[in-house]
Image (cartoon, protein in one colour):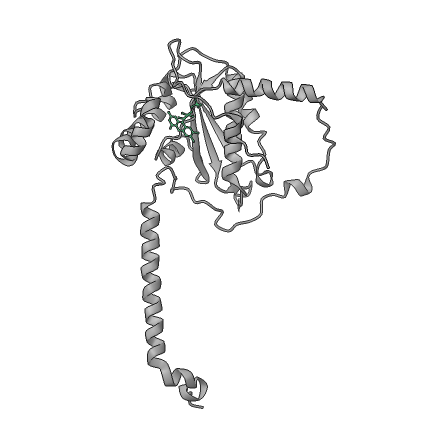
Length: 288
Ligand SMILES: Cc1cc2nc3c(=O)[nH]c(=O)nc-3n(C[C@H](O)[C@H](O)[C@H](O)COP(=O)(O)O)c2cc1C
């Protein structure tokens, strides 16, 4: 039987020209909007993103169901009296308030066991579905430290001269940073924190690491606190555009994305830090 547009779609048969025009116009508008969206995304100033790492498992699979299969064990941390709670909390605050970012280090050695214990402390952080999406690379070899410094200084020179822009460079002026990073070869250790953008199980299957950014950042916070608690100094540094090269240098897999580069050691005898004040409680806490 012959197909007749008029008998099956009388509206289309009668108005095919305006319908076709409307469809074409919609397609053109969609294309224009898409191009504008892509241009805006490209122009967005987020050069710290490491675009070489895919952000998700290609075929997202749930993570190993650790919480479902794990046996239950009693949890009874020490019960403290109210005064003791306040005393400990205030003591911890005072300790942390003494932490400063250090950019002038001594060459003195520090015990590797202290840095390892701090990394273990970082590994106690909570993580989405207990996927523990972090790797901390401990660098102690002088050659590797020199290679890290070479990469960072190469990129930082371009960052300061071209990528960061005048405002950013001006905002950093009080801190006194520039592209030179002598400390990377002076410190006894470097710790590089990598976030797992997705997980890979023993069979090589990818799985989703829920909230991997916040999980890894929490672990990094604990690491900073633990290093400080051990009397070690560090600098929270996020070398712009160095992620892919450092990942390859350290032979980290494709799912790992550089989050922080931490030089670890002791402050130089003549080390100074900017005289910054921290916001008081009423400026950082709202009570409802
Ligand atoms: C996410 C983040 C990135 C940072 N990146 C750098 C960096 O690349 N280089 C640097 O010298 N300091 C860096 N800092 C350190 C800050 O400048 C420093 O924390 C701030 O000035 C406050 O000083 P304090 O750490 O002594 O309290 C960074 C800090 C954070 C939290």
